[in-house]
Length: 117
Image (cartoon, rainbow, N blue to C red; front, side, top):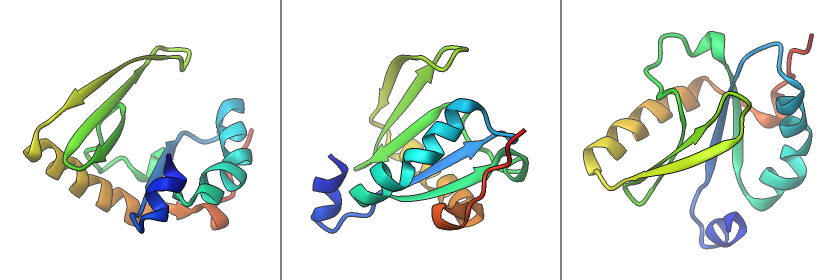
């Protein structure tokens, strides 16, 4: 899907807000990001949670595409539970603004070195 979208000239940005030291799963995500996400055309940045403290980010994973917001909800073990679609232009605008602020603080994938225990 990302290859098709970026092939049309549309930018896809992914910001991963992470606690450090990172978990084994986040290490796995980091290890496959270049071969999967970046290779597909995503621009990926990493934001250590400690530098996001002053941002008003939603506590859930979210996407904004064409003014439609999708929140992804996970359980305590990180398993996906459900998605919540919102067709709300004002919400999409607010989330895009906070994302842009967080994005500016993120470290590009090529420069990020995860803190491990």
